[in-house]
Length: 477
Image (cartoon, rainbow, N blue to C red; front, side, top):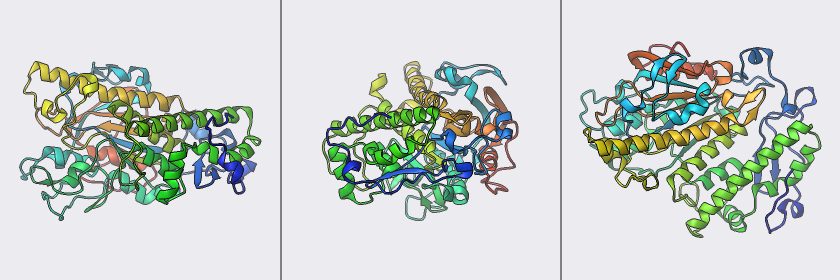
C-alpha cells in the first residue's frame, strides 16, 4: 500500500483511529458495507474478493446481478446525465440497426466502449412540448427530462412538476446506502426568477425533483462532492482546516487501512492500492483547482470553490466523483447536469467563442453548424472517457460499468427546431447482467421516454406500475 507523501505527517498516527470498521460478513469475509475511518473521515471500500463471491446466475449472465441487494452480489447503480440544447441530429444519428451499425462522427469517440453501449432512437418527451403553453422549450426540456411531467408555466413560487425517476428510486432503495442519491452539475443554478419565456429558473436549473414542487439542488464544486463522499466532519472549520493543510483523506484512515490490508489476499491488496492511488490523484486535481481559484474561505455545501477553469477538467472531475461514489457504494443513484437548460456557455477550449444556445439556432448556417458539431462531440468525448474509466475499474467478475446503467442524453433532439421526439439517448453498462449491449435500437416514433424509465426502475428492484406518461416497460433491452 502506498504511503502518503504529504509534508504534514500522518494525522492518524497522532490521533489513533477507533477499532476497524470492516466488520466480518458471511463466511468470515469482509462486509460489503465496510468503511475505513479516521479523524473526521470515513471511506467506503471498493468491491473486494473478500466481500464474497458472485452468484452463479449472475456469472452465467455475463455480469453481476445486484438489484436485490443480495449478499455477495455487486449492486446495480444508475445515473442520468443531461446535456443542454439538443444536438445537430443529422450528424449525431448512426447508420444501421442492431449490432450492425456505424457510429456517426459525433458519436465516434464511443468506439472504444462500443460493446458497452446501446444507442437509442425514437424516444419522446411529449410533456416537454408546449401543449398550449407557448414558448419555453429549454425549460421544459430539463424539467421534463426525468419526470415525464408537464411543468406549470410560472416564474413565481407556485412551481409544479412531479417526482423525477432518480428520486422515485431513491425513495425506495436510497436507504441501502449512506447517500440516498447524488446530484452534481457543471453550471450554477439560479434559485428563482424567469429563465425561459415565463418559466421559473427552478425548471432550467434542475433535473432531480423530490416531489411536485421541490427540486433537489446539485453540487457544482468537486471539492464539496468529495467532502460529501469522504468527510464525516460537518463543521466548516474542520473542512477548511483539512483543505488548508492539504492532507490526504488517505492519511486519516491509514491505521484502519493497514489493519485491513493484513486480512486481504494478494489480489485484494493490489486492488486496494489502486483504489487509494486513484483517490490521491483526484485529490491532487481538486487541490490544483483550488490553488487556481485562490485561497477563499471554504464555504458550506451550497457555495462553489475550486472549480477548474477549463470545462473539460471540470466535467472530468465530476464524472470521477460519480465513479468514486459508485465504486465505494456510497450511493447507487446519481444525476449529472452537465449544463442547465438553454445554457449559453461558450467553449473557448475547443475554439467556440459564441454561446451554445445562440449557436443551436443556426438556421443551417454552415459555420454555426460546424461549431455545434464540435460542441456535441466535446460532450461525447468527455462521456466516452468516463465510460473507459468505468470499464477499467474491476468489480466482482467484471467491471464497475458492467454493474451500472448510465443514460446520457438531452430533452431536446435537434436544437435548431426544438423538437422533443427522437431524442439523442445513449445507454451504457450491462445493468448487472440484465442489459444486452453493443446495439443501435430503433423504437417507433413517439415511444414515451418514460417507458425506458419503467424498465430501469424494474431492474433496480423498485415497485413501479407506471411512471410519468409511460405505457409500460420499454422492451428489447
